[in-house]
Image (cartoon, rainbow, N blue to C red; front, side):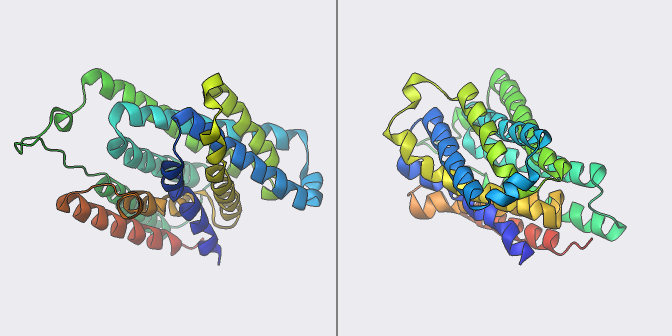
Length: 297
């Protein structure tokens, strides 16, 4: 049951791209919509668990919760920036891979989650498979009408590559900082949701709040925020039960949904070679997730 709970974030987060693609809106509108929806979820959840919230309520709870939520917004914002500079097909799987590496390093070296040599060997093997799988799912084959490679396929400009790498690095720091703060706090997930929501709102105000950000698309995208809120809650619960390395890695298997979903539901076009690479990548991701799930403390 604990491992099934750890897969809920994968389902919730992996479907966000599909839902937001259907709903439309700019990046800022989608970001604000997600923040508003997630905050609404946090408020309702806290009201239904008010006793647990009051029991754990403290200054440290609010500080760490707000910090965690803000760091997530940092990660999300710079991930969007990396996608603009490097392209989604490159930035998304790279972001997934760097997050997996970063969080597993913190989980193992700082929190000592893999306690035996066998666990470490299996964990590193699973991590390598997951990173390889996300790389395969990102494969893109772009050709001109005469069959030659397009200029974009030959590589990004040096300037775009450097700025994109910096954005990806900052995104990874934000995402990893979010999960590390949650783990280090040791606080009750039921009490952490509302303070974390304030961090989301603060981050949304800093990075996405503009006059043009408010539209019907913004409020439609609250649905993605509700999905994100559910995923965040189950990640917090899973970290408490399984640890950071396993919980976060399993949550990233949502790449399967975000890779194949657009092809099946949004009509995104893929060549036969791209489809083969995507399917192989999805299988590798599932194998890596299963290996991580078999690690025992």
